Image (cartoon, rainbow, N blue to C red; front, side):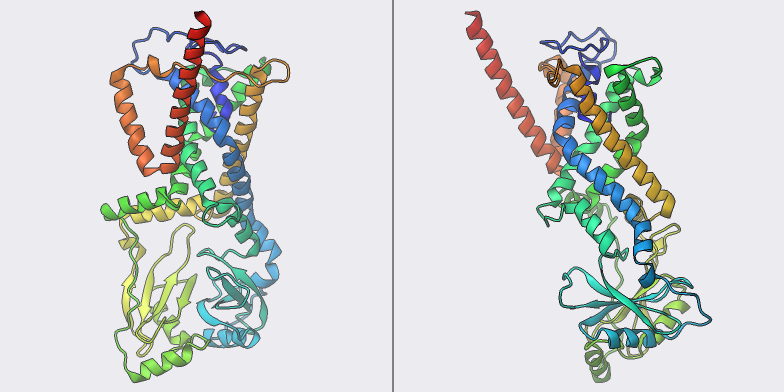
Length: 477
């Protein structure tokens, strides 16, 4: 149901009568009903069908790549086990010594951030920027044994979750098909329409009460429809969630969502990285440290100790000062539940904490956005989260396959079935149609990759309808 083009076929005929294997030449008259929403069923059926047919290929790619991405977390641990893990030792070396070892092995670039070993068997990551061959938006992570300062290797890394090459490749494939900013339109298009198709499928399914029918003893298109609708009904809530959270960081709809959050006071706060003290000494130290090892002023070890004193437990990331007037920023980077996202700014000259930002002080909308994105990417609840995402992706794949199969089964011989007939708009009373159009216009403005294709579809549909009408009149003369 939800994503497949076919659910549209779900009503192969009009919304109200039993399904048939042939498509009527004109929409069946709407059954008499006390519900004012009954006339919407043929319209929902037609929209669900056409949206499914044309959007399903994009959703299929998103589902397959999303399935792979959810599994990439565990695959990453296996593929990069040598770099990521070490035998647990007795005591860890100071961070400064670990960074010095990383810089000796990889002197190119500058230290952009350091993630001390968060578990007994985990390596420390020293992230370098400005390394030749590494994308500007990525860093080069050097993995250091925290007990011996042995460098275990180096890998390109991307994003706040520390994605290594395997997961990065899949992530970028899922997000933009490796086509850059223009490629992001594919994923935004899919996310913009997923909730519409899922919602339309739900309306069609429960309006016909097919969810109560048993699949046993049925065959052919009816059985395919039963599987399609049942799985779609169970998975619809997940599709709504994926669509909503996916749009939060999309190119166009995401900008509208950010503006709305800001207007409601729900934007994500940031810590002030301005140092409280300065002077020639601080500037000299900052300039010297800028060459590479991240040791500005009091150094990494005292900065980390100051952050620990403020209650920042592992995992944390230390970001060196950007310039002579800036402070160190130490922030927690745990996205799993319970979320740890506290941050402190530490003056490099005195080692004093000059600013503190607690996750508990985030606005409610900022927290919900953080949790929604982390749930969407599979990090909020770890393995359970990732398995749930894989099941949702698999459900979406099956729905699309079943949808096209239903379309095929409605046809004759080796041809697809006919499209759902026109005329649905004429059955909707004005007191329902006018507010509906207003809502669609508003949604189209804030979600342009929903509004623009929908408007194009309506224009083409009206033109084709007029052409068919004129041909019919000429033939009757």
